[in-house]
Length: 173
Image (cartoon, rainbow, N blue to C red; front, side):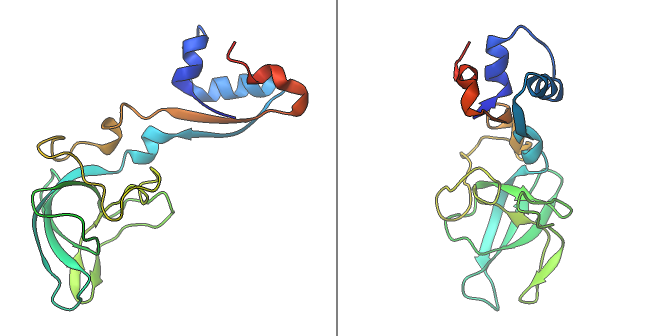
C-alpha cells in the first residue's frame, strides 16, 4: 500500500518527519518497504527557456539548442522533436544524476558540444507522458525555477507491506 506523508498527517496529529513515522509503523508490526521523497528527486532539475533550435550539422534526428537556464546560456544537443524556440522545458545540468542513475556531463554528440540535457516526463521519473520533452506552460514558470516547486510541493511517499492478518491497517482510520 502506498500513501503520502501529507495524507497521513491529515489523519494524525503529529509534526514527525517521514523517517520517524516509518520507524513507528515498523514498531507496530508492519513492514515499510520504501520511503521516497519525490521533492528531493526533482530538486536538481530547473526550468530553461529554449532561445534557439537549429538542425544538427552531422545528424538528421538531432537539434542544437541555445537555452537559458537562469544561470546563463548554454548549448544542448537534443533528439526530441516536439519543442520549438520559446518553449520552457526542464533541464538537467552537468553533474545531475538522473532517476535512472545516469550522470549528466558535458559531452560531444556527433562532434557538437552539449552542456546538459532537456528532459521528458519519463526521464524525470514522473511517468510516461507525451513523446518528447515535457513542455511547461509559456511565460510561466520563471527561468531557473526549481522543478520540484512546480508540482505542488511533491510529497514523500511511504510504501507499506500489509500482511493478510492485518486487514485493519487498510482502513483510513
